[in-house]
Length: 125
Length: 507
Image (cartoon, rainbow over all chains, first blue to last red):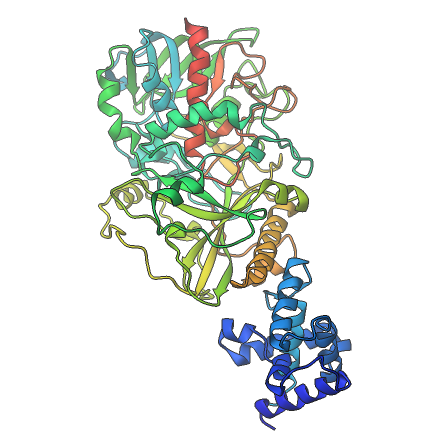
């Protein structure tokens, strides 16, 4: 399974987690769950996946796609009209603002984006 | 006027109103301040007008606990002192640096930043800097291309620096001093002992020795010790014939609290897109030169109970091959000076293009630590004076402060949507491990610290050695804490403040 396929499946799973509510917009928005903004900054998918693996090792209770997706979605449920992508970006910003960060391989990451990395890393290379 | 002490008859008595021991940044600034005073000022310099291996050998010592620059070349033993190889970085200490911080043991100056501001302004002139303006808004106002990163101003701010040409004091102030009829500069007059009165309540005289073994005697009404933090302590400790623990050392403080600045690559930052970086890049030569480094607001330091530090942007990512300057800095002082004083091949007339990844260079104060100290060696130099060895020791707060700085920067870069920060492995590890690429700034501070209580400081707020009526210390040796900035601007300011104080003593 390609990583891109996996992202779509994971996104669909996340949509399922929402119980088909209007919480999620288009599938392309939902795919944002497993596409951290960090990819645009680090420009290295393998590196981002490695950070995700480190997160799963550090937090074994979240070493599961459903759990990760739920943890990410759960934090952005309050803004039904906005795109999920924008909601996640705001959630990441708030994580940073409130000190909800994790340090993986030295990178200071928002808790939300660390989970996104973890979700991405669950995809076969 | 200038007198080569080697040409004097042995046993010559040199007398004056004020004697300044050491012609470096502090000593020359003070002497310049007295050129029109009408008072006879004796300025004693151990070396000559050029760096010489034979004189530098007198500075040899060992770093006993961890790597450091070769002590024989870290400071310079000639007219002009270490300004002969300094880089010219200047910025004043922050107000918080003067405060007693309950999370920084032994912190607190007996003077405040506002008290020092007038002297900073004068020091700015001696060091050939621009206006006494260190508010970033001033520099932004004067150059539309100078813009700060959009970080939360309650957390981070651009700490401004100005850059001296750098002023080589031995060159710039040589003629004014030699032409001043009241300034009597003695070269090759190395003070090897400060001789107190029998009761050890005042200084009676000095023993000055030439490299060829002649001994002269120097007497003045007031004495100022301005040999740098290592050799001030060394001379006080070695002057132990009447005060067996050394002069000013009744409470075992002389030589202790040696501080440096931690200068080390600690992190990298990846921006999502390039940003204008003129404010943060090394400035162009040939005009007033200034740039900023990132610094934490005092309130944030208080909140997180950390030391003061700054971060500079170096273009390009971490290489994994970061190196310490301790190993690469030559023990050959003449070669170092030659290299530092060579004309620069690049004018730096235009800032480098913005990049998206930068290494972060930390400059941070060291917490005052009584176990970090200068000690006398059992070995003696060519003039029979005990050598000074260094025990440079750290505390957990030192490293924790660097880590918290970058954690906060990581949060703020993320919150602002600018990018992400990666701490280097050594920083993520525990608080005791330091990387091999750690460097210092050649900044020696704190060995005769300032405190109103003789049990907590060697000198008082006027820089007078406690218990000794006419002995003062000038230079960074008196700093109780070192702040996050290079010490030269402050040490000249403190010396000029002492200079004003001494006018009342010598009037």
